[in-house]
Structures are given as C-alpha cells and as structure tokens.
Length: 338
Image (tube, rainbow, N blue to C red; front, side):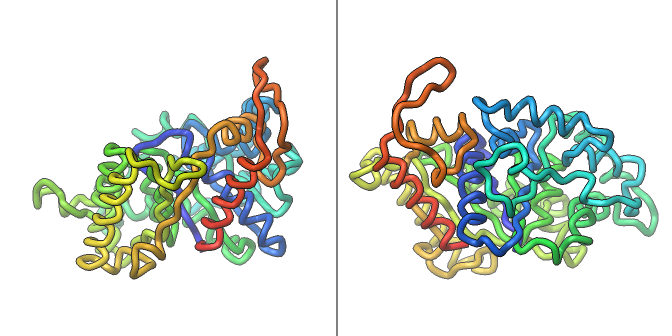
C-alpha cells in the first residue's frame, strides 16, 4: 500500500505528523519493510529522519545530495530529464538512504528517498516535457509515471510506501499523488484548512471547478482518460486540539463543518474515499505542543523521546511524560487506521 501525506495549506505540522506516523508504523510492524519518499523541496521530512536540528540532519542531507548519483528524488528526476518518455537503466538503490545509519532513533526497517530543493529548479523543465506534443505518445502520462517507474522494480521489496508531498500542486506533487493508492489529509482547525480540504479535493478530483474549460486539463480527467486509477482519501487527521478538554470551542465549529463537507461528498462521490462513514475516516490528533517541538528538533519518534528538561538551541524546555504519552497515543490511533 502507498500513502501520501498532503494538504495544500502546508506547514511543518504535516511533516511532523508524517515523520511520527512513519516511525510508529515501522515500530509496530517490525517485520515489514517501510519506504519513505520525500517529494518536497523543503526536505523537512528528510532532515528529521537524518537527525533533526540538534543532530545535524541538514548537514547529513547535504551529504546525501552531494553523492555522485545525488541520492535524492531530485537526483532521480535529474536522470529522467534527458529520457522523459522511456525508462533509462536506473536502480532505486542509488537513491536510497538508510536513516538509522545517521539517526539511531529511527527504526531500522525504514528506508528513505530524500527530498531535494533542486525540485523547484526542475519543475519548469518537467512541465515543458509533460506538455510537449509528440504523435503517438501521451507525454503527460509518461512524465507523471516517473515515480511509478522508479518504484516498480522494488514493489515486492516494501510492504508500505509513505510519500510526503509539497503543499503546492506542482508537477512533482502530481507525480507523487499519481503514484499512491491512498491519501492522508492533515487539517488544522481553522477556516483556511477547511478551504484547503475543499481545494485539495478540487485539484485531485476536479470537483467544483469554476468552469468546464478546466475539465479537460484536470489531473483527474487526464489520469482517467489514460485508465489510471485515482488515489482515494483514506484519512483526515484533525489537529489543534487541547490536551485534556477535547476540541476547544473555538475550533469545534470548524471541525464540524469539515465533517459536514466530507459527509456530503460521501453521499455524492463515495468512490473518492476508502471509508463510508466520516467517523471511520477521521482521527483527532492532539496538539503536540512543546513535545512536538522537541521531537522535531531532535528527529526523535515520540516513543524514543526522553521526558524531562531539554536543551534546544540554547533554550531550556521541558517535555512532560504525560504529554509525551498523549502524543504517542494520538499517533497510535492514526496508525491503527492505516
């Protein structure tokens, strides 16, 4: 199974959620092999896996990007630019990183394809290649299949693949989304996230387009015309919730509105979801607060984070054990629904 973490609102909260979920899944499924793919130019997920702020995750990422084959998703795309419509001789192992070799807090059954800022430089070239007209060749489908091409030879080597997507709907995000079966949509409890969910569904599935003009160019239309399956929404992770009182009143109305939107779509477009009832496809994620900040800085799964006073960038902060357990419990609830 392949999952994408994507919300076109962005923010580091999504990346932190993806990191904690991937690590916890690997910890609780020790016999499975897990692949994480960071398709984001910020590459925050990769920095977390490689050690975070306090353990030189950024420096280690630069080392991986500086290898001969550029061990990152950008390195692979760089090889595809001269051969966009046919698969060149390439091995996925050239682009893999074993995070536990750099960060011992990460489970050993996780492999990583690092993110890379070069994606932004590549985007215009990839767009041009995808829209080139060549008789007898669906150039858009050929380009959108780049990541599927990379993973096809190792489809039996991994039990699950997690993809962290950039907030934009750029061409590399579309390549990522076309590769997965299921989507996890993290949302924050504010009106902008409600709009972000609506925008995400519009961009992926062509819902509520402002004009029929856009239909022929929509991501969903082009995939469907090529007999390619669209990914389905599998989970909506609702964030910014108080630690002990459930959803705060200021946020509850927004969360309820998001649920109403999903309920309506379940009736009109049930095929877009893996679930039939909103409760089955939603999970409430408590605000990670200081615990999340420290885990993010250290590149630490909640299960490996040590409670007590911590020194982060010269500042003394404290991780409370009961907060740490609450954060881990929240992630366990999400992992249980994957």
